[in-house]
Length: 249
Image (cartoon, rainbow, N blue to C red):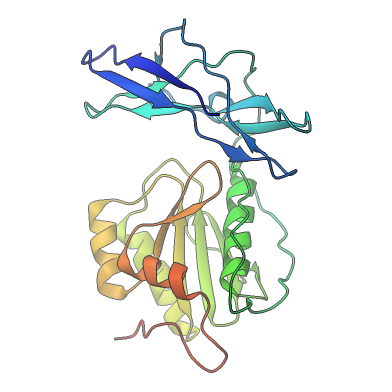
């Protein structure tokens, strides 16, 4: 059973009740960090990869996993890092890197299985998580794109270009436009994955161009940001001979 603890924001003094999230162990059992109700939350002012992760063992199989450090976003804008008992921070390498993505196994079955996320600890993990998600959608031949985007890493599949931005800067309109224009030259659809989200202007530009936008959370689950992303998440990759949407409209 997941734990809940009372949390008071030190900035605005609001009272909250925080429930620890659960993540799936490779054995299938849910793993939730053990919270420390006696310790005060810490304001997360300066974010780094090293501070984002903790080690927690599965109660069923005993396997030690690396999971996002529990956090609570207060309505006042303060982000609180919730104290955890009996878990040590996990040190991970930082900075962009590249990953080799193996080709997928083809289009999905009529009933897709639940997506199995890949936790994001490094920039390489972000690329892997996005590639796994594209394969889950039904894009079988996921690989590194021939052209490198201005920011992040490019992925390609038949009829699709994807950009994975693992930086801490929200994507700007120019990032979305560059991806869309590159996809246009190849008569392909496109999709954008970002760790830090998007500016309001970037979201408006993506909506006008019908570019799906996703935010990658630290658990490795792409969260749809706009209607185009919602449609792609629901429908999956287009069947051969059909494009998911006309981005040239």
